[in-house]
Length: 304
Ligand SMILES: O=C(O)/C=C(\C=C(/O)C(=O)O)C(=O)O
Image (cartoon, rainbow, N blue to C red):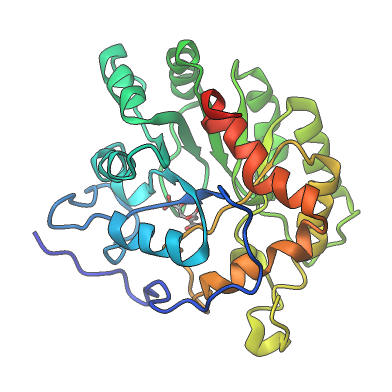
């Protein structure tokens, strides 16, 4: 089977620059994906975009180039609930990766146990209509109840305007929550305005973990060419810095490689690493963000 990439698709950066910021040993890229390869792991018929191929070998090549130690590989919506590509990549990492799956409410206990044995530690609920048809809340609650005995958590991907309608449902879920990309705030609004304050209150209320990832998705000021500064994405910095300083023990970082559905530019992953000291401004905050927090969530048995 061959697949044609969606119109306007941007491939990931083939030669990311070496980061100036040295990641601490054992740093975890807590949000990344693999795509296919399509001829081996076909993309789902119900997908809403068709990506390029992005294999585990290429992901691990980036990991090593950036100085990352481990990965959390999140099932991409283009694969629907067919987790084979993600599971293959997690297994290929030989203990240096965990997985986040997509499952349907009729998933069996045996299927969940097999995913757990492979290194999966959670499922993702996606609320972006451009990515997937969101399952009814009853189905999501069914999935949450099924995965709770495994000690898994739920990764939630939503946009800031949708939080008020979703917040009470999220608060009823009986297991830990991990929020993708800070809940996608509108960084054109004030960081101390009602919208982001509402998000911070939600994180406080639910104890949710927060990924301070994807400045390239959220920025209105854009990549370095426009800013002229190495750290770029300067308009996202206050939001990420605020989350890190409010919840230093509940934040995670990720590259989001291979960066699906970016339209105006493709980030240099080395630049995304150089963004870190601008948002986590001390070695202690960097260590929590990059090592301590993701290890506690994904490799609790390996914390020395
Ligand atoms: O990679 C991301 O986290 C963001 C996006 C896509 C997905 O997460 C996905 O398809 O699974 C997006 O915003 O298009």
